[in-house]
Length: 399
Image (cartoon, rainbow, N blue to C red; front, side, top):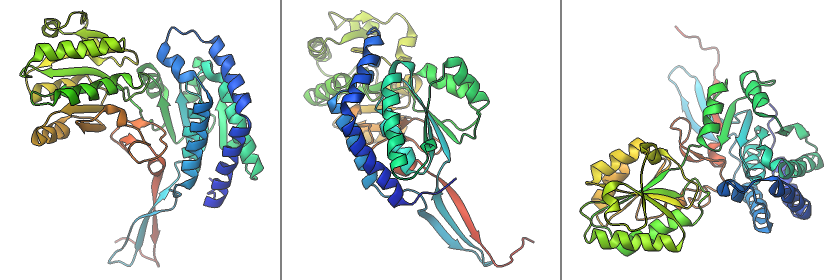
């Protein structure tokens, strides 16, 4: 594939900032059509579909941030000279063609594609049908920016395939695919993994946990829990499960206090049998599978655990491997928790809402990867490349 120089890529991105701003009214009008056609039954999905001036400003900011970042392609990772005279250089290289499959969020059309483009990959976008009007206008912005700078529109393509057509494309792609990034719920991820013929980088479910240890600062713990659950319910970094240590002093009063706080935010509480003894308005967990579920809603589960090991075991059994936090004043206990919990991000006395590229200093992100191969955590510009070995010799042969 053609390697674009940094100046050309940045010129395209500068054009994008101007074009998105100029087409603001057109973008909002297209999004209005999508919103009017969408049922509000799924509030989290509806929230992700909404585009307003603030989100458009966010798109422009994301493009500007990526434009200002260092080009990730062609950076030397390592260099060594062997005894046989060979010089071996390992450098970053583009993936090639990346297919991004996502649901609802039109801003992904900008914020994911800008990363892949700066990383010198060709981008195929498969958005959900619920955002079709918004996505078409945003891809038109891309095409205008590309052509304005002498590049083919083929660098970024929007697919409007139905489920059956998408399945067939995954099984028999009409062009070489190097990487697929599905951004959405578990059903979408499972669908892609079942049918894809190339590497799939999974942005897994959230279902994030907080463990309130017996020595936690209760006021701080409560503040962290409320923020993690209510700050943005549609975020994959939102909190869903709260594990309370059975040795927590004044456990009954503290759980009632937490319940009252949640009621102020209209959060529905589910609880295990022991927790129900301390809560006035919670419903009993009727199905063990609830522990696996990512809610993306004003809903949370409260459960009791007997110590750190039980908390870790429960998190590693049920969580999506995304984020988990421990609330404790004991730094050694926190260190043990953070080592043992199998998640992309582990926290001590902080909200899981910080699992975000911008918040973690990575910049704009394509996704939060819960995979362990290639990269785990926020998938930013630096992580959206692969590598290649350059071997220089003068006639060496292997014995």
